[in-house]
Length: 517
Image 1 (spheres, rainbow, N blue to C red):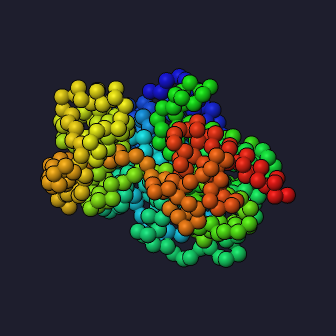
Image 2 (spheres, helix red, strand yellow):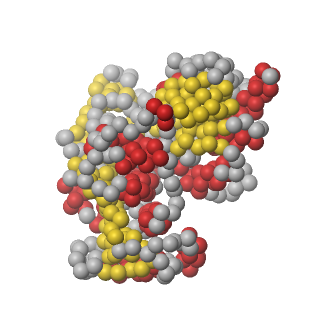
Image 3 (tube, one colour):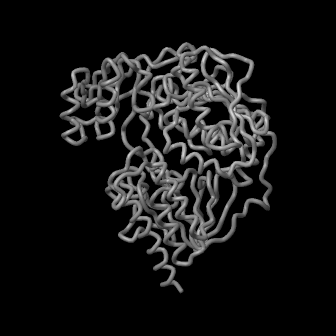
C-alpha cells in the first residue's frame, strides 16, 4: 500500500492521462502476490484512466504488464517495482500514454532503425540506484520500436536464473540468456550498443539534415558547470546551444547533497531535474544524447558531433566533467558485471558472505570498504601508495573493523576468472616486486575520476592527467574556447564550485566578445 502523501502526488502526476492504461497482473501463489496487487490497486485508484485486471496465465512470482487501450505496450515488470524502481513504473504509465520525455527526430529514427524482433530482460536490485535509468531507457525504446519488448526482473526472485547466467552486478541486460551489458550506461551508449549488436536497417541521416545552425556560444556538457554557463550566456543575450549526453552529468549519481548553499538537502536526480526546469526559462537550444567528436580552430568554429551533425559558433564552453577511472588491466573489461564492479551500493548485496577487494585508498574507496564490510565475509583495501589518502576519521573507522584488511604499496596487474566470474586478483608488491595471486570473489574499483577531455587532446592544452588547463577567467590555450568544472585543472571538484566556474566561463566569454566588437 502507498502512503497518503504519495497517493496525492500521483494524482497530480497522472492527471494528464488521456488513454486507458491497464496494469495486467498474472495470478500467482507467491507469498508476495498480495503486496503486488495492493500496490497496483493503490496506483489505479489515483486516476480513472488506470485500471487493474488479471490475466488467465499464472506465474510462479509476481508479474504484470502494461497495456494501453487494451494493446500490449511490450513493458513487463517481474517482481514488485518498489524502492528506486517505483519511479520506473510511474514513468512507464506516463510514457505509455505519450506523456513525459520526447526525443528529437534523430534519436527516435535511430531507435526505430534497429533491426530485429527483440525481447530484452534487465535484472535489477531494488537497492540499485543505477538500475532505474536502464529500465526506464529500455521501456522508452520499447514504446518507440514496435518489435522490441522489455522485462524488468527483480533478481531477488530468480536467484537460480542469476546464478545460471553468471550475473554478479546490476543492472544486467540479457538477450537470449546472453549478457548484453552490465552496470550503468548512458542512454546514447545504450542505443549504440543495440545498434552494434542487432544491426541497423539503413543509414538514416541525409546531408541536408546535418547542419544544426549557427550560434554565438555553444556549451558542451549538461552538468552544473554547463548548465550554469548556458544560463549565463543566454541571460547576456547570446544565441546559445548546449550539447550533452545526459542532463546533470555526474550529479545524477549523487545520492544525497547537503552542502549546496541555501538548499539543506537534495538528491542528484532532483537537482538535475531543476537544471532542466531552469534552462527551459531561456531560449537555449538543447541537443540531448549527443557527444562532440571534434572542434575546429578559427574565429567561426565548427563543432562536429559523433552523429555526423555539426553546428558553428564563435565561442565554445567545455564543461564535460569526468567519469569513473578504470584500472585498465587485463581481465577488467572481460569480467565487468561478473565480479568487477564500480558501485558498492548497487552490487554489494551480490557478495554477501563472500571475499572482495576494493581498489583505491581515497575517501570513496575507504567508504566503499566500510559499507561492504557489513555484507561480505572479508574486504581487503588495496592502495598503490604507501598510505591511504582518505580522511583520517574514515581510515580509523576502517582499521577498527575486524573483517577488513588494508594492503598498501600494491600495484594491481590482472583480474583473473574462470570464464564466467572473477576468481582472483594479481598484484605486485612495489617494495619487493613480488607478484601475488589473491583469491577473491569480487573487485570494486574506486580510484577516482578521469576528465572527459579525450576529444580535445589536439585542440587545447591538457595537463598530464588530461584536465583542461585554464587561466583565472577560464580561458584555454585556444582563443574562443573556454572550460569549466571537473574537466579542468580547478583543485576542488564540487557542485557549487562547478556552478561558479560555469558562470565565470560565460562572463569571460561575454567580456571577450565585447572587447572584440
